[in-house]
Length: 127
Image (tube, rainbow, N blue to C red; front, side):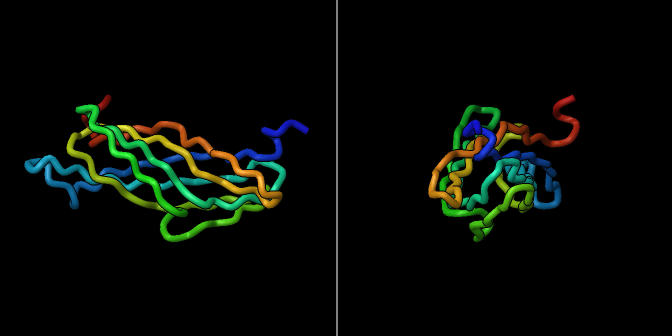
């Protein structure tokens, strides 16, 4: 069996711009993002920590590290999904997020599940 078959997490992201929490005059742009993680591997895994790289249009980079997500360290059995919503604030109308989740499989193997880069954008800014 290929290692990639045993330890594999599929990650998707959906983004919403929160106009009511944003203040364009003050360069405060608030976004909510919903992440869905699905264990597409062959063994149960636990999400233990996260590492985000958030970049705005001025190339200002924020790195965020922490335990779990939204106060949880979910365990995903093969085929199981976990979804959560969180948010971030940018000083520009457009930015990107990417990063990784640090996972531990039930056999003790540690691996990173890479979060594909996704775009944060105020509606009508990017076409």
